[in-house]
Image (cartoon, rainbow, N blue to C red; front, side):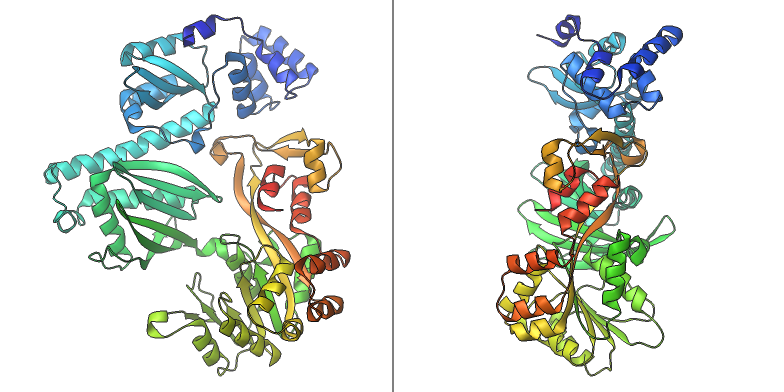
Amino acid sequence: MNNRDKQAEKKPLLGQILLEQGYILPEQLEMALKKQTATNLRIGEILVKNGWVTEKDLAEAISKQTKYPFVSLSMFRPMQEAIDVIPESMARRLQVVPLSIDENANKLTIAVSDPFNILALDEIRMITGMDLDIMIATLSDIKRAIESFYSVKSSIDRALIEVVAEESAEFDLSREEAVSIDDAPVVKLVNTILGQAVESGASDVHVEPFENETRVRYRIDGVLFDMLTFPKHLHPPVSSRIKIMSGMDIAEKRHPQDGRILLRAEGRRIDIRVSSLPAIYGEKLVMRLLDQATAMVGLEKLGLDPEEKVALDKIIEVPYGIILVTGPTGSGKSTTLYSILQTLNSYDVNITTVEDPVEYTIAGVNQVQINEKAGLTFDTVLRSILRQDPDIILVGEMRDTETAQLAVRAALTGHLVLSTLHTNDAPSSIIRMVDMGIPPFLVSSSVVAVMAQRLVRKLCPSCKMPYELPQDVAESLGLDGFTTVYKPGGCEECRGTGYKGRTAIFEIMPMTEEIRRAVMTGATSDDLRAMAIRQGMRALRVSGAKKVKDGITSADEVLSVTL
């Protein structure tokens, strides 16, 4: 059955679907129907304009009505061949996004918000000469996708045209870098990639070579999105351009390298850490964007609720001991540590850090960059720091037994030590230190507190929607059944994802006398957890559940990062 046949079938009414799904109330449907009669507007348009449903809710209902699948374009990267089939002017006029093409079946897959616009669909069929497979997307998603996909395509096309105009279409691998790395088109392409990353608020940019093309992905709010692809023959000059900008050796392709780019964009100073990794189709490059403005947020903006803020303020007032921040890579540990240092930084204290790498600079703080090739390791630098009359020491990470032993020694000799570990929760950090060879009595004597954390995406305030949390989900979060919370919608401000920005959830475990004694008697991580919760520690999931209840994040986000 083709798409025309589907459309000819008797469909359930859109308003009824929205009502049955719980998106609208009967009285809202009645009011919308009256307004439809008076204005001749479509029922869905009226419901969205009144704020009774989101664009996403409407699109999903249309999907159910028409049996066409729903697609979130923010998570989708169309085939370049499909983009080439429909001109940009036509895509904008008809509000359509080409997604993929099957030349063998002579079929084009498109995304539309209005599958009932028969004239538009017929025009696409006539222009392309292809049958259509239709998918449903929100109008905002479609508009944003047109801007993204076609602007990117234009940039790539301009770069490609200019490269071909200046050089032969035949690329000689032995000379393409020497010829192409200084080409203005390649420079423009790299600048476009970095500029769009900054504008999108990306934390990382992945440039990944494959057999026939190179893919560029941005990590935004912790999630990777496909942003663009470009022809395979442009990868070597693009790679060389990035390596030159970051101070790498462009002749070295067999070994991984690290570099750094200092960039000014949108009035902000962006520090970009670049890593290259040899892969079978070329060098994969990952660029981490470090924005000074986003790191120095201060304790009040970390996402701590009032109780957690009071607990942390009390912890960092101690004159000596170890404060550990734990969590997986990308959980915001560095931001938390820098925020603590900002609070502690004053003219009458000597603060020294040893980091790999130094991610952000702090005025008034002595920061040391690890350089293992030059013999500057964590343990050697830490030994030297202890002779520098420090008051507060930040150790970027306790990577080995020797570093941990030195940190304990520093804490026991009257210094405040801040550091990180990679463990799943706060109690596990204590056990991890014991496993690293630190005697339990030294761990219990030196550690002041452990703070575990995770990052969760914040609901977009412009489009979040209230709904009743199902009983089983509520129970898993420790909330009352059928609690009214919020779920993601999708709008232009959040790129259709329903989320905008991130915040942290915390698990703060002070080392009480009872916990210290338990550590010395060989207590397990589960024992320490149970003891800490009895004494008032709020577990990560409980901290997350409070943010769900407050409408800051969604239940799905919290459940995805907690056990």
